[in-house]
Image 1 (tube, rainbow, N blue to C red):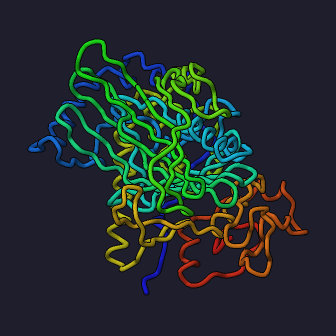
Image 2 (cartoon, one colour; image 1 turned 180 degrees about the vertical axis):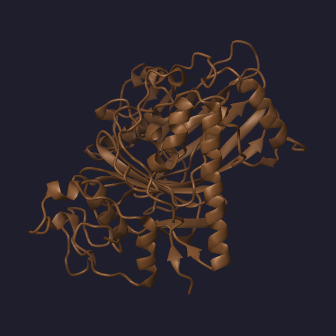
Image 3 (spheres, rainbow, N blue to C red; image 1 turned 135 degrees about the vertical axis):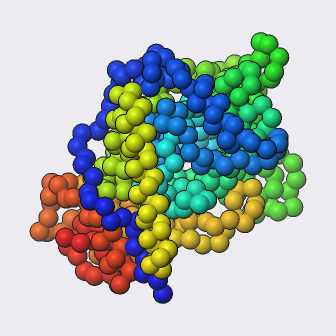
Length: 488
């Protein structure tokens, strides 16, 4: 069996303070060289000639096509996930779903959270393509999120997050597929996202598509139909994100939807039809208003369901300021991999940014070639492959979380602050069972006597290369609190 190692081998990256250039020309987008605007159109035309050569409407195009550095958004695609986690205010965060007393209340809270997570996509800007094995762990208002690039060809990102209480868990994966529509490029996310609330409520949902219009009216918009369904309760929500029409005076960012109860549930498979509880319509960048109400516990007709006007103040080049990166000392973190390129883009230095982008790409090519010649099989740190189905029903490779590896990792990078509620050994009340759990030190069992929380917060994450060499040869006992299989 081939040895499983990580795609590493270079020296540790220099990592210091987090970059937050809120006052740079790039963030302001004032049209200067290296900022939004400027030479984007000439660069765009060059890329489009390359991408769309011989492509007809309806045909696929490569999403991971290399673009000039001046067209890059100064963030990795993993870091952009921070925007999706953002919910405006604390009361609309991920934890708000699990705090509701009834299934109807939890579905309404989920709808509000989901509409808040739909933020304005950048136009003529593309985030960095994550390298294989790249990770991003961040804490938000009321929870944390971990992402890992588990495949490069095709590009697949797997993620897992939960709130502090563990009452609400969010996981899934996505793989972008780009199609030429005749007037632009539609990026459809293949995969599956799930939210588990409490013990037995599992909400499954596909991901909405992104349409980048290259012909008037110009812009980027979320389009498509999304249905969130909970098999246990029979509650569903249907969204439709409508594209802007070609006629003058058309509206952008329109969303309509309804919350309804399906009469066909797990306990009543012969049921037919649906009972509509709530209908709504509006702009996900502005206000979404209730248009019809048939359930006493929901907002009345004419009430504002979601107010998203604050989204106009969120700069996609920076992202929400409430998030904090937890794993920036990890060599394979998005922060460490792309930091020099990000700084060059903020400085408006096209030459330096192009050089740094080329350096990262060349290094990854050398590593892939080395693994192929050495017969070494790469494997993700936090996920393992299994057979499954996407939200659309098609067969795909699903990525299952390695819960114990993540738990130990969070103890290291999170300083013991962010617990992971292990699904293999904890019931709804999250009472750990020492008999069935294989963790050396379960986070809910307390810290070892010889260490304290201050000591944990000062630990440095080991090199993923050394980590995976040991994982491939068998797990060895390490000091409690370190990543499993890590080196000194």
